[in-house]
Length: 251
Image (tube, rainbow, N blue to C red; front, top):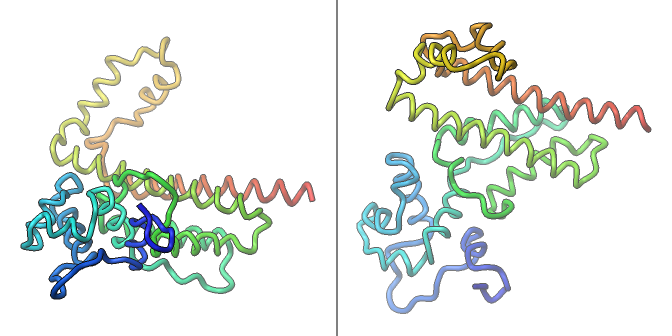
């Protein structure tokens, strides 16, 4: 469905350009009210708990009252994916591209850690909400003074966002699994690997196991998770730096 401007209705809702037509007195609900309540449910009970009925209960309204403003749960998830974001960081005018993307990635990480469910929202299209586009613009701005073409800048940002989202989702899932079954993350895992990994069939993994990489009391540690994020981020940025250096050599 589209509105009178030709925008899909969900995009019009994201930008506050449409509230469904109503008659009579001013309703007690609004799209921002519904979105905030849905985020509260997700924060306290997880994304799986979010439904039109559960959000209606959170607001003390009927489910049908919500449908007068939001057409579906999918539409609600889109609204949540934009409203849950803080504003992007301000980039100093003279910041180098690498420092800018590091600041950006750290800010995305901090924002998404406030809402661990965020990275589990299905992605069914490019960013389109006002806050998502503000973050997109911020990252592109960090690359403004590089020799990258505009399409390449988009590719760099989307790759970085994919990395950060993946780290957040993996961390959230591991943390939940660790709470439910901490034994699976202890020495029992490394002992099991030593029994089942045949270095003749799995030589690379066999060398890792023999080196004691998995020999820890627990394989889930928040400090290690943070270190893994830094390692992965620096590898990604190193790749961009190498690409820019090769381009400079050619020109």
